[in-house]
Image 1 (cartoon, rainbow, N blue to C red):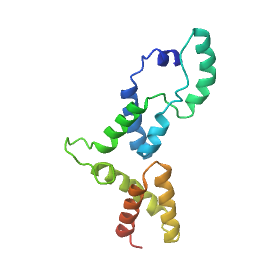
Image 2: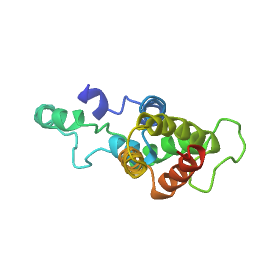
Image 3: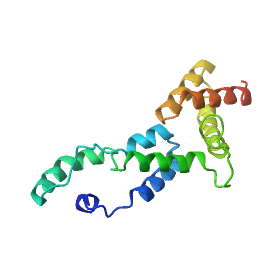
Image 4: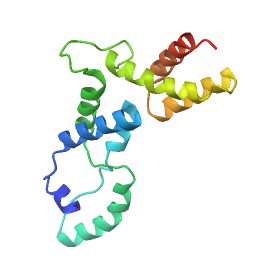
Length: 156
């Protein structure tokens, strides 16, 4: 697998887009977390076959830790396609850097988290939602917007 990667036989842009869509739809990861997972330590280089084997042993453990070997440009393009393009072809980007469709999807996921804590104090719910969203890689603007929407949607 490492040899295939070093020879450039993997379509990084397509992989990055597929990975981004998968993490967004199944895990509700945000743009920051997805880009972090897609980055590669740029100090790995492909030299001789012997050096490749040494690099493979060292790098395979590193790459297994969510480092997918995708360039910054491919990661950025994939995240933009997933979060800012809602498929309608129009300019649907909200003021928080996510499409309206992406923001609605995120609100549904956050609502599920919010409703799980119905028996805990409101401040505890708020702090859990903040941590849940920040851990997934969303900006404070998105976190704040979702939190306000949850508080207005579920007043008690």
